[in-house]
Length: 182
Image 1 (cartoon, rainbow, N blue to C red):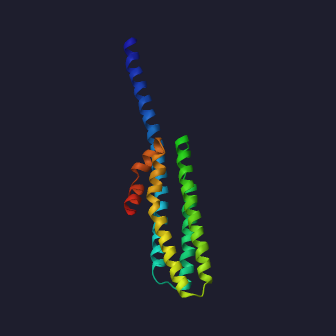
Image 2 (cartoon, rainbow, N blue to C red):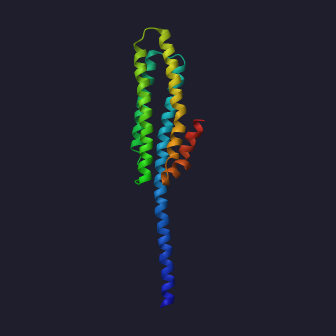
Image 3 (tube, rainbow, N blue to C red):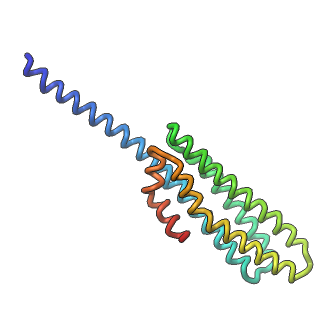
């Protein structure tokens, strides 16, 4: 009878190890999916910021200017919403990661709101030199926002631990974001 218990005990121990491994694996998969989604949203927004910065750096018609500002505002709102609704892992680390990235998205949204306010004033101006100078300043400001994206995500990730930190570090979308912004 004792010999029958040994294989049963070994089998139960093996099943427990497999079950524990799957649980951790599922948590990491959820974190990986979250990180890819968040970094993809931020990357898409980065493209929009760069495109508008480039357009503002050159000559642009008044109607096109208004359209670009509206597109930038919409893209920023979309990114902030996607980050907030990203479905971060429901763990203390996941909640902390979601909060860190939501703070970044909020800060970026505020910066774009400031750009929108300045652009509204430029649209009222009748002085072409003032408009041109203002567009160049907005282009520079958007370029600065664009350049701070990857370091900001990197700093947020460095302050984290657990599955979200691992996911942000190994995510293909996050790695691509870092590469794009170098």
